[in-house]
Amino acid sequence: MSSDPWGRVDETGTVYVRTADGEQVVGSWQAGSPEEALAYFERKYEGLVVEIGLLEKRVKTTDLSAKDAQVAIDHIRQQVDAHHVVGDLDALRVRLDKLVEQVEARREERKAQRARQSDEARKSKEALVAEAEELSQSDQWRAAGERLRALVDTWKGLPRLDRKSDDDLWHRFSHARSAFSKRRKQHFAQLDAQREEARRTKERLVSEAEALSNSTDWGVTAARYRELMAEWKAAGRAQREHEDDLWNRFRGAQDVFFAARSSVFAERDAEQAENLKLKEELAEEAEKLLPVTDLKAARAAFRSVNERWEAIGHVPRDARPKVEGRMHAVERAIQESEEAEWRRTNPEARARAEGLTGQLQAAVDKLRGQIEQARAQGNNARADKLERELEGRQALLDQAQKGLQEFGG
Image 1 (spheres, rainbow, N blue to C red):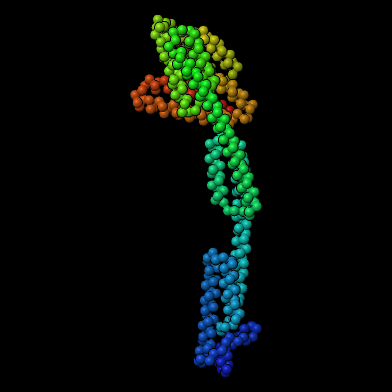
Image 2 (image 1 turned 120 degrees about the vertical axis):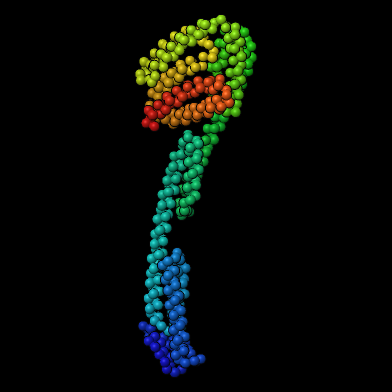
């Protein structure tokens, strides 16, 4: 018979292992010496030790799932409980028990982590829904639309919640987007209808303006052109692809008429030059009203200047846009002050003020680009004309920005 601290082989060749619960039969060995039997089953024990060591390392250093780790532990435990090895089986059970504790701790940690992640995802999605619902009522169509698209991308990057919560939040989120899209579609449909109506109106005005361009009834025709211009301004803007062409035809027809009239009234040039001087003086007097500090006084003073302005006759045609532009700039500035005063009592006006500022800034930038292009092409006459228009738009922009500042923005 042969033995060591953890096992023995009896005279029949039966191999035993010693445990805290007493000896357990390992197996039978008939092929060689008892020492060889113990050595064989001890090597099998060492194999289990190595296997447990590797599993301990995997649990400690890798992201092995709790489920897979438990399967591996159960597999080794079955081999330990089968008593087919010779060695300190109780020590292996202790190590396996510690592994179970570690796996359970990791399971709980991951469960807590998933709970935290789920809570964070819920809060993030609730915040996205709240912002989307707020944006659904916005009239800043481009900015709000871009932001909603960004929110969708953010949503896609967040983990899913439980089905009911996720579906409920997504339903609210999707409903907000749909509501915004519906409002935007209605807005632009209405805008398209208005622009189509403006196009038809301006087509009619162009036709009449072109029919009048060869008239020699100077007074009546000039008066009618003024009426047509008023109707043109009241009609609103047509579609972008039609507006410039219609305006060029409309203005061109007037230019033909007024050029003919100017040639007939050449003898009045001296009088018109004097009128220009008087109007420039009035424009200078009007410009001193800016910036507006006392709206009531400025309004009264401008009315006085305007009455004297209206009493003065025509000025040379090439000088008219600039001098009239100066007066119009003052008039618009006063109107902006009136509107700003009204807006201070109307909190809904802020959004419109921002929109107006953006439109005017875009118009100013566009004019500057057109001026640079005209200069580059050597078309100084067009560039000068555009610069006069730019002065008026810039004055409007300055006043709009001032009005926006009064909102604290």
